[in-house]
Length: 314
Image (cartoon, rainbow, N blue to C red; front, side, top):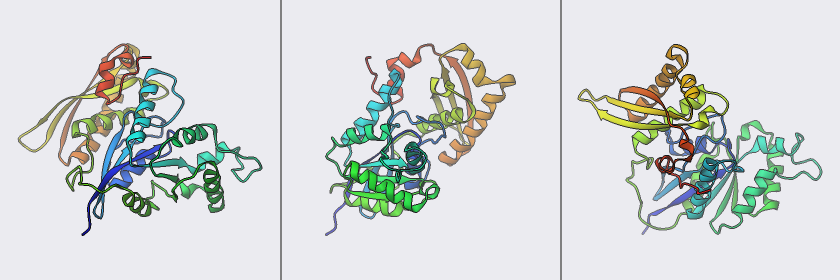
């Protein structure tokens, strides 16, 4: 008799490697926010996929980078913590960016090496005993011979169980990746109902969607110094939902920027977030946004707990 399998597959990689895009593509729905800006994902996000008799819990992790501040350290600890608990590891590499980091000519150049950030990730990854898979992403932007050279360079640096070439945005190569990861999941009962695609409550996803819109509308460091919390969610008799969210900023000057002249910025953020939250919730949404100053929130343990992160003492 066939038996069910269930396990965790951690998606690891540098910022902007495409982990959140890949997770959404594998799940077939938006469960993790996406931005062109690096380090958008702060805590681990889980998306659930059923492949035959196997349930795979994909874990989207914060990007792996050299931490500079307390929040960075918390995000990094979250990523490696997820890796330590996973049944399989998928290292996602932006193929085009990695080739550019090798000096423009690509890894076919004499004495070319992998980028320093990638080498640091590989060193840490070598400590894991879980099956490791290399996923070269954005292959539609790179010539095939260069992809093969890049794959060979990774294989020389560290042994992977298998290498996959995908385009998370276009959906290319994902079926094979999903099948392989399902094959290495351990036997066991499923952890979630068959129709569940994420383990985060809708109010948490709604806050993340609004935070995504902040990243799209604001510039420089400001989005990194904001956080969003869903303060109330009320389902109304007509089937719609009334949602109140607070955008917390670190300074009064930031509050003025988020609101914008005549309230234009906050209105645009609200309109974009409202549309996407309604699509995710499959009901009409009435979204009310408030902006408040919470000085030193980046050093507040309670805020870290609200984001699902451990508070670093140093």
